[in-house]
Length: 202
Image 1: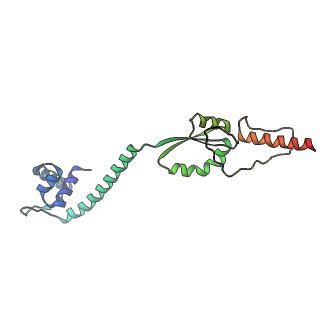
Image 2 (image 1 turned 180 degrees about the horizontal axis):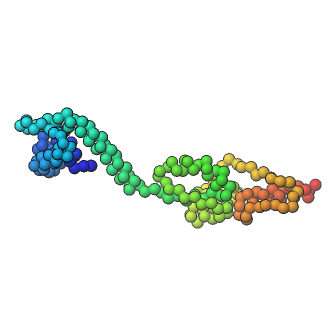
Image 3 (image 1 turned 45 degrees about the vertical axis):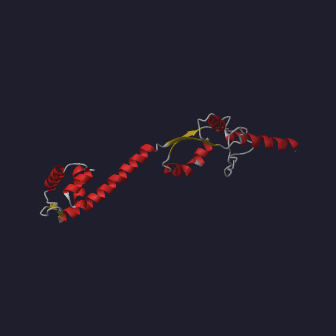
């Protein structure tokens, strides 16, 4: 905050150049010089110095003090916010989303992720098996997959289920499949095997 304004506020609050100097840890002549400088910059008189000890603020000084008080609050808030940002750097967290959940689920939670100022999120899109391995290797903090995979030391939470729907004729010879390790590929193969097993029994 401007040095001249700080000195002005001290004089305004104490009504005394000597007391203001003590508060600011400077000499009384320095206070007088700074007030004179401020008055010259503004082209107005700020204090009536006719008294022996106390000085009286002019109407212009009353208006200036109100503005200076607002500036001081803004300055202190800005400094405090700056200190907090330096003291508490954002925690970097990597999240793994499978191809399907990155399309369906990620847009729903993106706003909540961005709203938390404590964290800086990095999103990686991989298939289910790659995400699991990344979690095991601690390259990813959390992973969202579709494929049911069991691994030691991994805490799993089940989310509301999705539905796999056949697009096309079931007897068609041409099938488009996802890559190995994909959750969709896992359920596609499981569904096909169930149908083949059912037909063979009939």
